[in-house]
Length: 405
Image (cartoon, rainbow, N blue to C red; front, side):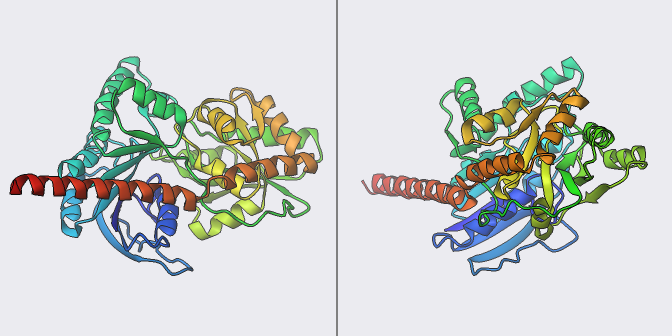
């Protein structure tokens, strides 16, 4: 099959680009996929399609831009040019922009593909019904929140015009099926990017690295984490380094620069900036613990799956989608009150001061992560693609038979 994927893709800084990389990495080695056409956002640097193993042909078509009003036209034109067997959308609500109109227009694309008769699957990483708009940086005013929710409901109805909408958590499917009757929604787990050989669980002696990874500034804030580690340093002899890995959330430009200035007096505080794909393994491997300094959640956590794949102990708030992942997929960690620095400090210290406990948590998370490797996830999607292609062929055959009669 010729598979078109509409997504951001490395070196793009637009959300979900890393997820797309690992989808492509696994789709390309499946014998049923003959060509992948990536319908991506435009970047100055070349797209990263370097892979160590043989695979199918990959074609790049840079046909959209973040916050562009023309995306719906340019993407549809690109799809017409390539004539794919199926189209796969790697989406969340702010995929095509952080401005209302461009973001909304981009989300109409699955409906246009369906109208054209192209088998279409949407992977929807979050649903607006489960997003805290204030904490996620979208809207703090109650009236504006109601407007967002109304618009979100309308857009969700358009997205659900696709042949199939996949979500990563059961509660998302339950909400969509209850609110939008008759929708074709399926739960497909997020999946683990890389399944590594069983980790050694050893870390370098001496300084222990306490790491947070992501896009920061909205519901992911690092001030409390920095202050928690400072508190541990004052009350113990533990030698800790703080690693803030990642970039600003697009809704809060300049956030990390302000934090860096605010805490410039703090020793052993490192801001890595954007982490390239080939450097992620080293980042996780060298860390003693991965911290999730979240006040809210907006979907299944890719970072938690990554931490698990490297056998890492984690510290996280027991709320929202993180709590769901614990229940549904078996992840374990130390928990903290997201409003209490002492609670976070205690949770981190329980791990970095006890290697046996750190290893125990790491093993549990590795087991959870390896249950759903990305190879298994892409196989699920390919099976769905084949069903849709078969249904399309049968429909054409029926139309042809009716015409002859």
